[in-house]
Length: 182
Image 1: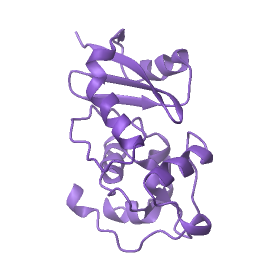
Image 2: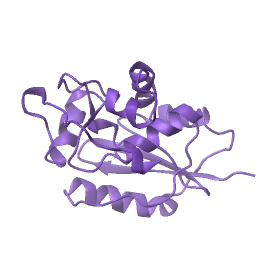
Image 3: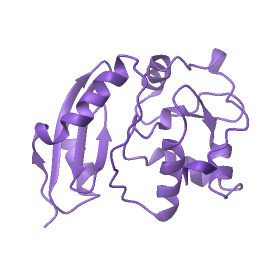
């Protein structure tokens, strides 16, 4: 029987909810109530989640360091549950280095689907592990900051933590090669 553990973490952007399975990090949501988090989690697993913060201490510590501005890679495994296309997009997003931006089109090209920018955008919007799979680093090709499930003020805050808030809604870097991340 699958075991799912979850916890909450206080952060500068409010309460963050985390869940992991024995395979790896399954979900990271903010800002939301516990009930909403558990409802979203139930779309990914039939297991009854158990509130056990000690099982998520490593992720909590990573988030603390992230919000302190420390440059850290997340090297723990993920338990990604979605379509193969979504998983490819999420892995591509995870490959965007801290301090860099990528456009939806660049992500589409990096997964060898250059005409799938809209589908990439949909997959970005379904990212189950925000911040660690840094969908906030994905912007429009025209330099616009794009959207964000947590709201644009939080996206701007996260980009500021990383010192990459684009000037005047910014210009994404050209030519980021994400192919090495697949």
